[in-house]
Image (tube, rainbow, N blue to C red; front, side, top):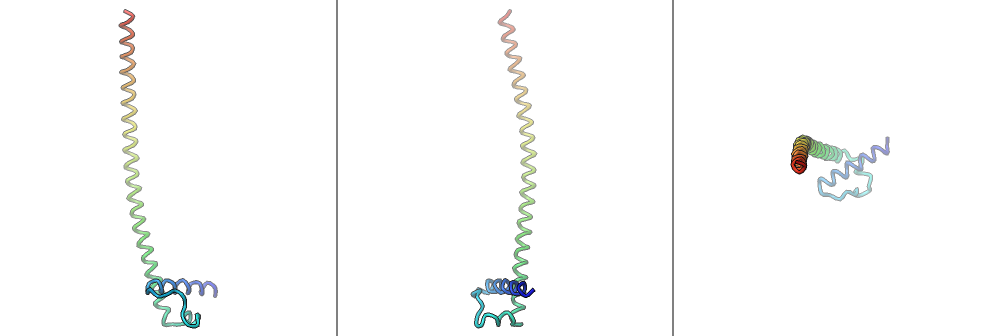
Length: 110
């Protein structure tokens, strides 16, 4: 538990330093800041703000991913439709070519 709390305090302190533009290394004795009740609320506030930023970013990325997925589905449907049209056009062209070849071959035999 102690190691966890030390790590949590270190990360919170780092976040606060990042927000305030201060160096992230602890000042003075190095341990006083971990016990200071004056610094804890700003640490938690900065940590909560960072979590909010990350959640907001996640929401934006999720929205972008959903839009991209929707667009991908549209492209997939369009691609399938074009593939079917191409297949139909190729079959028609092959039938016409076969009929034309039979017509030319049939006339040559007459």
